[in-house]
Length: 273
Image (cartoon, rainbow, N blue to C red):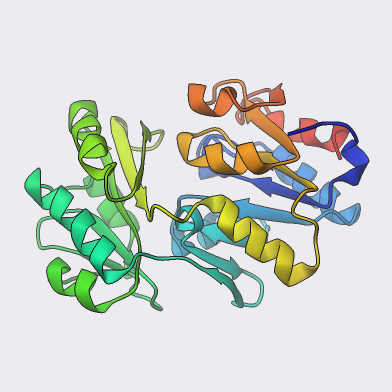
């Protein structure tokens, strides 16, 4: 990584939770204005988040931001303005079966995200995720036989949000051999959360696909993110920026540390591009 010439940056990539906002309904207006200012300068902004497509699109739309997005930690890349997909990740059937087995051995029922139009989330009859998380899916969820789902559908990600830390830690260890689990404090529901990506997929893969689709140089990308699921893209970025309250794994990769999302740290990017 290098911070030699900010003017060489061709793309800014931002995580959402803990980065652009602390929570969507408490997004500092100055952060939103800074995104718009980069657009006026001709610098595109790409979202890279662990959220699913629906929970990414809705809060961004409410903020008046119609951005391209890499969702589900690299599982899918979509231009929110047009619906065009520029990237697909996903588990093989064999990998997805092994991940579900790891949840099952701990008597846990995950949320399973599939490459499908709504509903795009599959759950068992008694999901182990936080009730608020389950309710947030609205109509974008259906009850299904998860064994059949992982065998017959293209699975992009798994998650379990708002659980006890000891449960998240045990699950993290069980999943390491078969996938890339991201274990972090849950800013929205409390406790800890696990999101699970394939071993060969990260947010950076979606960023590379976006650059290829738009003729951008992947070596001239500024990335800002705060979590362990941002480490791969922070490592690969030309400039890595992390909010001051970021996860230690993310902070260890930072070229620059900015103020927290709640304090408008995103605005500091305007001095770097």
